[in-house]
Image (tube, one colour):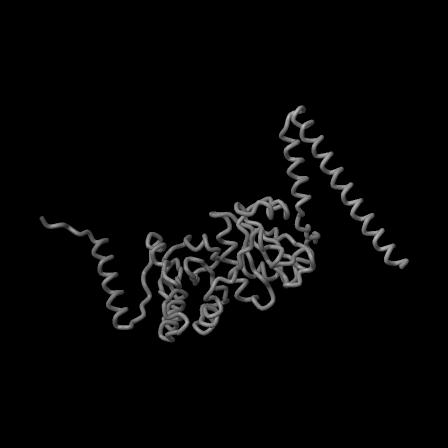
Length: 309
């Protein structure tokens, strides 16, 4: 029994066949991408998408520059797929402000080209710098070790994004672009809020996404909800001086954590339970203080003994 194939199926089959032939012949093509096919398109190592809303002079100019990139046959992007997507709103999710625009994906991680114009030479230099994700991943185990935030920032200045899954994609794409332009002078990092509640509590993060600039033992909160490269660069370079500087809170000690835990339990307990918690706690703290006093006295006595002999 014959099976009827609709036009969408035939077009998809033709497109797949054409890409296969082009690949075998060593040809590079700019593929047509739709919002529905976007997910499968960006699964390769690198993907460059031209987003446009209408076919006009600006579109043809951007497409011409993209074709020049193909002909340049950049060795560091030999595995890159090139595509074009017609949509007025699809770029919004990546922070695209003006179209036509270029969005570069590194294993599905997006970064928006922030040049004034789409020029093949400038884009090639930008692509080479943007091959790998620049944002480092921070968590409760490595935050203080890597940033040295509360001890004077000996590892440099840090711009850190606090985000959640589904919240912060625009900010993340923008900060990746900032990292490409400022990677010699600035560390860029991200913290997943759900997985690191202690850091959220330590830095009093109240909203998602949140961005904090750490510099010389101080922190500056990026409050404008303008997640574009120019605004963030200006903030880091100069505008942070107009923001209230906060002293970076030190990393809580084991004793601080224990105290906070006890306070929290007291808040949650009834009167009788509080008595059973408070009394042992007072005894434990008293014993600890006594042991410290004994240790200090013995140390002083030993010092005096050696001093007079």
